[in-house]
Structure formats: structure tokens, C-alpha cells
Amino acid sequence: MPKKTIRDINLNGRKVLVRCDFNVPLNGDRQITDDTRIVGAIPTIKYLKESGAKVVLCSHLGRPGGQKDEKFSLNVVAARLSELMNDEVVFVQDCIGEAVSEMIENLPDGGLALLENVRFYSEETENDAEFASQLGSFADVFVNDAFGTAHRAHASTSGVTKDVQDSVMGFLLEKELKYLEGELEDPQSPFVVILGGKKVSDKIGVIEALIDKADVILIGGAMQYAFRKSQGHSVGESYVVDEDVPIAKALLDEAESKDVRLVLPADSLEADDFSNDANTNNIDPYDEGGSIRDGWEGLDIGKKAIEEFTSIIGSAKTVLWNGPMGVFEIDAFSNGTKMLAESIARSDALSIIGGGDSVTAIKKFGYAEDVTFISTGGGASLELLEGKVLPGVDSLDNI
Image 1 (cartoon, helix red, strand yellow):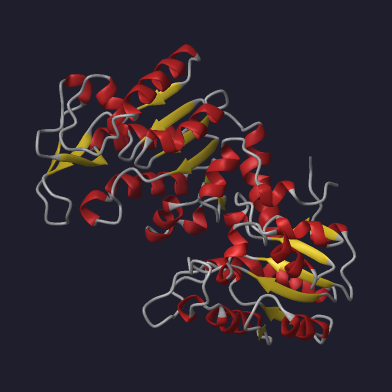
Image 2: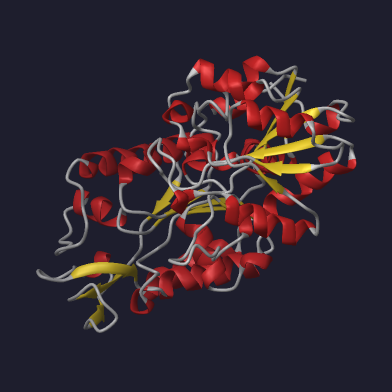
């Protein structure tokens, strides 16, 4: 059922509580090292401000464990948002209570405030009804613009909707649903899905959900070795979860029965150490008797795999990528991920980067501006792709 957005309701003079995702990385001096998530919230914030709303922002930062901890204070986010908006953002040193209520009452129309970290209270992640009610008591309207936490049934993502007049989406959440649901509902063919990561079991839901839509599924990352092991190949010391092996075999059988190309890397880059100084070797293709030696582990896809994967991407009309091809954080094992990122960037396909490490990779290699859409969610992206209901979306008002 389609959900209402901030365009669908009157905002002038109303108190609006906005759940943002300001869970930004900080260095040891509590300086923000990547403000992408703050920048992403600005279109919604500007629209609310220009519509005459009293704008009250809330978020979590890190995992303070239900305790007030200055290390996880959102004061640094308030300062950065003030700079980006070129406007005062009042920082409120709590997220519930009379002092907060009084401050919001005194906020002028078009005024901006940011509440302290909602996870300073354990009731937030417990979706405690009383805590949610206290958050909702400040507002007439609730706006969810935090896709990254939309798969969590927390007080500030779904519980609060019971205590306000209107509950709607912000622009960021709307855009996520447009691409991860709308564009992939009936994707233009050839539709190529690229999946990496460590464990097959983490991606089985996505594979099951997309196997009837995809023309080709490319498998990379450490989970490729469970597939190769299921075929009887030697994978040396490569990362394999034993429980993943029969799952991988079943998925190969299912793909074959449905005439879907589930393509494994033809070869691998093996190394004798998990470091930049490791000795490395591109093994012979598995189909020609290649294998990873005892004492060595596969840490990237090989040259033939890169050639085959990039060729498939080049002919795609729709590409979804979730998960790197190798340990891209270490330069010696980054080539597979880098070459796929470049191939996607050069492609004419509608390209969706499905959150998590793929986002880090596409930014690291300088191709973030060359893809159609980058999702801000990790777990939320996966659950949406699996077809699961996201509590932070489900609790919003239907059109």
C-alpha cells in the first residue's frame, strides 16, 4: 500500500518530529569523517522549514547501550548541520522531558532543533510504549526519513506513530522505496544481480526473492567458496561456513531448474597471508582443474572472472549490486571489486548500489557520481529486497 509523504499534508505552524539517520562515523577527536547521511537529510529538512513547520530532528548515534555517554552525543551533528544549512540548529540535551517540551513550544515556525541521542534510553530499542508516547507528545506530525533503521521496530521509527496526528515519509525514504521496490518490481532486462559478502545464509533471502526476476546472478566475495566447495573443489583455507555448503548446492540446483544463470567466478586470487605483503597467485580456472592450495585462501576474484563479470555487466539494462568481490579494503585484494565498480559506472544500465560495503567500495574507487542510485541502508536494503515488511514504513499513513 503506497504511503503518504510530506507533500501530502499541511505543515504550516505544525510541530514535526523527523526521524533521521545521523549515525555518522567519528574519529578519535569526535570529528565527523563522512557527513553523507547528514547531507542526505537536508532536502526533507529544507522542505519542512520552508513549509513553515517547527522542525524537531531525532536520531541515534552508535551503540551507547541505553546509557548517556558523551562519546555518542549528537552535539557534533547539530554543529555540522548548522553549517550545511547556514542556519541555527538548536541542540537539545535530552530527547524527552519537560525541558524538551518547553523548548519545542518556543521554537518559531521554520525553526530547527535536534534532540539528543534516542538510544541514551534503552526504551528506544525496546519500542517501549511510554517512551514512544513521550516522543510523540512533542509533535503533531511524524516524518520517517531514516531508511537505514526502517527495518527496526523501535520507539522512534514505528512506536511513535501511535501518538501523532499524521505519519508520513520524507524524501530520502521515498527515494529508497522508489528504487529498491519500484524500479525492481519489473526491472528492464537483462537484469544483472551482483552479490558478494561472507556468508551465503546472509544473502539467501535476496537470492530467493530475485531468482525469478534476474536474468543473471553473479556471485563473489567469500561466499563463492561455499558454492565451489559444494561442487567438490578444494578451497584451501578460504572462509567457508559449513552450514552454507548445502544451501549453496540447493541454490545452484534451483537456478538451473529455473533457467537463471547463477555465475560463479571462473578463477580466484589466492594468498598466503591476509595482508598487503602476502604472496599471491591467480589460480587456473576451476573448470580446468584449478584449486586453492592448502594453507592459502581466496581473497579476490581472478582475472578471468573479472573479464566475464564485466562483460555481463556491460550488456545489462538493470544492475543491482550488494557486496564486494574480495577484501577490497586491502589493496592487494581490491582489483575485482574496483573493476566491477568501474564497469557498473561505465554501463548505460540503471544501476542500484544496495547499501553496506558496496557503498564504501563505490566511493573508495571514485564512482559514486556515476551510478543511478546509492542506498543508505545496509540491513534495511537487504530486508526490503527480500520482500520483508519494514516496520518503519509499515507504520506510516496509507495514501
